[in-house]
Image (cartoon, rainbow over all chains, first blue to last red; front, top):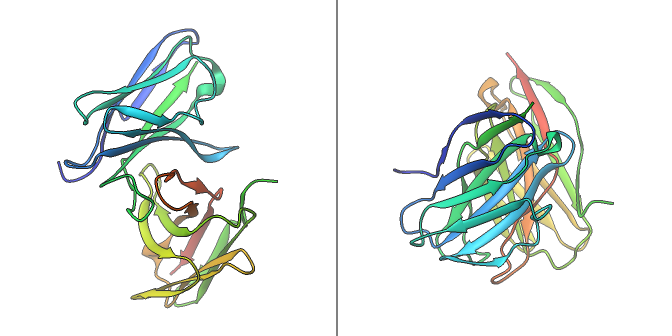
Length: 115
Length: 112
């Protein structure tokens, strides 16, 4: 596709369940980022992938959060034992090389609601 | 204090007005400065992208960066109802540390 694709667009789940969010970056982009957007905190960085490696995981809020990227393309963000404070929009972005002089392009996000 | 501060708004202006949006930041190491526009239930869309200090113009939009004051601005001329959206400033360090640090965003409404 032409842009960053995320699925599902919406996810409602019960507290304590595990969820998986998927991101398909722009073809050819080696860098992939996950961000979280919540009402109180704004848009916050979670993790950065360069190829299949994650040189910066500093934004992951707890060990319940993990992410992987395979084949230098699709990435999955997994949240285990979800809590109500995990409710937010999870956004994925990609850039051509991961260098700061390359702009990041965002998908439309997954809106996660924890009941 | 957050690294990037942005007026929370909301902001409402009549069609045709000049709009000024601003952010301040505390980390003098930031080198790349961006403005994103976000419509409801959509992802952020890159509007303007500048490196270091100076001005950049693209159509009705002008971005200004003043690194000495740690202050960035976005000006929108001849504002249109279609400009109604949330505007987010973002910035990053140079080189391989490319994660973005965002302001909280300001919601703009342009009244016909």
